[in-house]
Image (cartoon, rainbow, N blue to C red; front, side, top):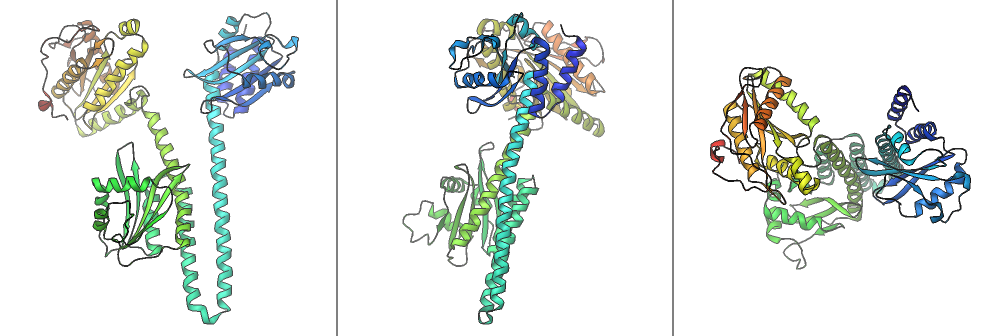
Length: 571
């Protein structure tokens, strides 16, 4: 039996290790302490490919046991319904020595998802249930998942670094070619003027590629990179306009970055119109560069000629930004003064820049997605508890500094246990998701809806006094009652309301006062709003008229006495 001190030390070592090799070494040491196996194999599960990837073997008989682990990886994962199970070694193609049996398979889970399988050889005189109980003492899932993600990030960084190094090699090669060209031009005085022009153009283009590549590597602000890109391309190539168009699904609109010469009018607003969105969608559907010549004579043009006439262009070039067969944006170069023949060098250089920009956009999207996941509740899409706590503290200090009211509504779904017991936890999750969706849609832009935990939500109302907060809470209660969930039908919730400075002069006290009011609403029969009293202590909660208790599957009956949407001035 392990002592509490040994268990604690092992936990600290497990969680303080970052490299995957170190984490697995500590995991093997823990398993050695628990059951003294002859060999251990850790098989990392790749959720994207749905198979086992990296494999690690430990113990005196690890080479022999590794062959059995490889055969295990080629088969379906047995005992999918069990977290730990004893394997029937006869089911596999590899013959295993008797002294290495029995073999136990322990599935390592992180947030209910498989992240690894640990095969333990020759676990004698220890029941499987007892082994599982010992293994549960350690956070294997968290440690292995975190170190695996860290290794994957290292691999991705190495890949990007390799790309950047290759790009720098190409730039160095172009610079050497430029030096050679300059040397040749000095030997041919008769062609000096023309060759000087060519040299300047090449140098400018090299500088353009270098500056944009350097910006992509050094800046994490994608807006600044794209704004700088269209300006440098436009000025270097001397075009009338240079635009970068993106269709962002998360905000359902077109994003436009524009450079134009001082004598040429801006057209950004045109691309925000319906015709502009249609043009952008058509441009994003093409994966190869293409030019726009005389629009009046081109009978095979796939774009709206009226929209192109509004742009006033004589010629144009569209270069897609393609990343793994996905078009993430387009560069649109326009000449409004005279027709222009786009050279192979133009298209090649812009294609190289497009490759760099595609990587930068993808990295920015991944960074934004991870930041959003860090502050968003995965089930409901509203702010999570950590994000709420940070915003709550910040808004409370702002309210105190400027002498503004700050109200808080705490919301708790009624009868969630009964819904779970009657219809299953998935239906309970649907009810929780329905409340989160309703709060997102009905809250003002300045408000912060958040899931605080379980079936409990919070709604933070900056610059809102207690009267308005009470009306908002009643409206939220009514909207929840009107929400229909398949199975239980209409649902209900209890709400507690408190306001600074009326009920508290500290954020923790304000939350406690709202929570007390919520408790009073629960005790008073549920499906109602309770406002904390101004006494700052106890359960002296102000009485509010409330409908009768609503049970799952009951229809919401009676006329709800609440402020109208117009009175609340909420969309």
